[in-house]
Image 1: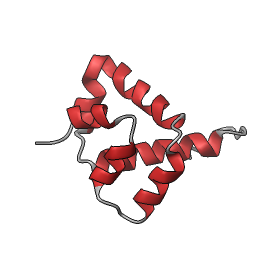
Image 2: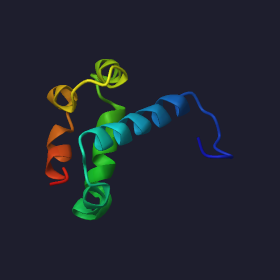
Image 3: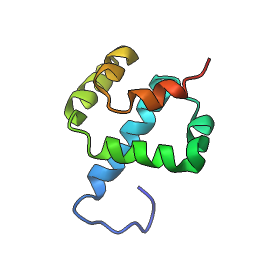
Image 4: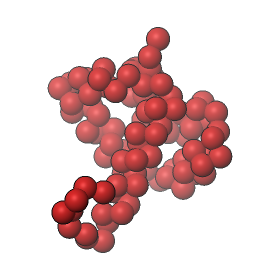
Length: 89
């Protein structure tokens, strides 16, 4: 968490999901610079919001915690199209 960040009831959840989003990007070999450029950053902001409200969060966390194959995570992920568009060659 960033120093000086105020705590409010959802702070922990928000930062945890942002960490999960970043981990999924890493595990699925997404080019973060390319992802950030899509639609001038709007696409990655929308994808983060999808992650934040995702009904599959707990399943995703379980898969990530056990180092599941990235394809298993992609199979349940509402952002799978976004990640696929920006996968490194």
